[in-house]
Image (cartoon, rainbow, N blue to C red):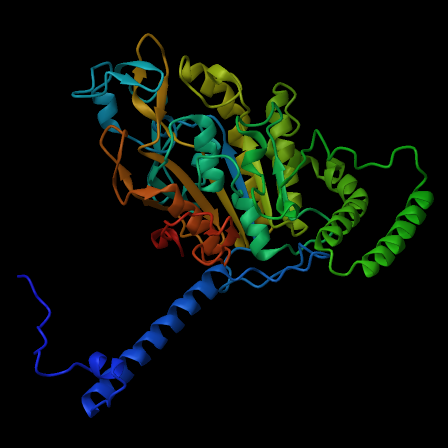
Length: 498
C-alpha cells in the first residue's frame, strides 16, 4: 500500500508559513517544533558519540609507542602466536574429513567447473592420507599431522572460511591485513597499535620467517601500512638474529658509556624540540635498539634449553635441518611471549612456484606435503604443549591459518589440487577459546562453505575480540576514511569462545 503525505488546506496557514511571515506559533506548532528539535539534537549526539567511539585516535606517547594501553573490554588473551602456513594448505588432506570424496574418487565432478585457476579441472580425488578419529571429541584428522591430531580436544576449528582472492599474494594480504591490495596495516600492527606491549626491551611485534625464506608477499604480512612505522613487525629468527644490532668489536664498558652519552644527548635534543613527534619516535626507536643489544642475544641463545625440550620440539633432529630450524623458531616464539612480546607471527613455508618450499600443492601434492608436514607437525604441536605445560596457554592465543584451501579434484594431468577460496579451515587454541569444537561446514565434497559461512573478516574480528579489542572501534583515519582491519564487515565467532 502506498502512503501519501496529507495535503495542507489552503485556508489554514502552516507553522512554516507563519514563521516565515514572522507570525505567531500556536500550542500545537510549539510542541511539534520542540519535539523535532530535541529529536535532531539527540540524533546528532548519538552520531557524534558513535564517531568518537569509532574514530577518536589513540593517545600514544611518541617517546613510548609500545607502552601498554587499556583494551576496550577485559582481554582473554594477552599475547598471540600466529602459525601462518604459506601456500594454501589443503583442508582435504588435513582437518576437513569428507568420506564422500573417497566414494567419488577418480570420477568427474557433476556440473563442476571445466577450468579453474591454473587450467582444466580433472577428476575428483580422494584424500591422499588416511583420516582417524582423535580425542574425546572424536574429531577426524589426517595421518599427515599425527602430533597436531593429538591436540584436537584443545582446538576450535572453523571449517567454513572464505577469502576474497584465489591468488597467493592478494590472499596473503587479505588474511594478514583485511584487504587484497598492498598498503594496509597487518593484524599484528593493529594489535600493537591498540594495546602496546608488556615488554619494553624487545619489539612488541615479531615476525619469524620460515628458515627456507619469506612468504610470497613478504613484508606486507607484517607491515604497518598507514599506521605509524613503529608498529611494523620486526623480523628475526633463531638462525638469523636481527641485522645490524650487535656492536661488534666494541668492549662492553665502552658500548655502555656510548649508549649513556647518546641517551643524554637525545634527552637534550628532545627537550629543545618538544613538539616534534617524529623526532621523539625516532629517538624511542634508537633507544629500543640499544636495549635490544642486551636482550636479543640472550633471547636467541637456546643453549639454556634442556635437552628434553629440544628433543620434544625436534630441534635436535640430525636428519632434517629444515625441521630443526623451524623447531628452534617455535622455541623462539615461546621465549618471546614468555618475555611479554605481544604478537608473534611464525611462518611455515616460503615463496616458491610449484610448492617445493611451501604448501602450494598443484603438481605432486602428496610428495610435497610429506616434506612440509615433517617440518611443521612435531614442532608446532610441541609449542602448544610447552605453552600449556608452563601455564602460558591460559593467556596466549595460538592461531593456525593459511590463505585459502584446495579443490576436491586434481588438476588435469597433475597429481595436485588447485586454489579454492570458497571453503577452507583455520583454527585457534588457548586463551578464551572453547576447546574441542568445530564450527561451520563445507559441502559433502569439501569445495564450498555451506553452513555458518565465515569470511576471514570474522576470523580476524574474533582474534581482536579475544585481545579485548572491538574491531569496529579500533580505527585509524587515513585519507579521510576511518580504516579498520575488518573494512566495513566482520562478526565475532562467539560459537568458538569459552
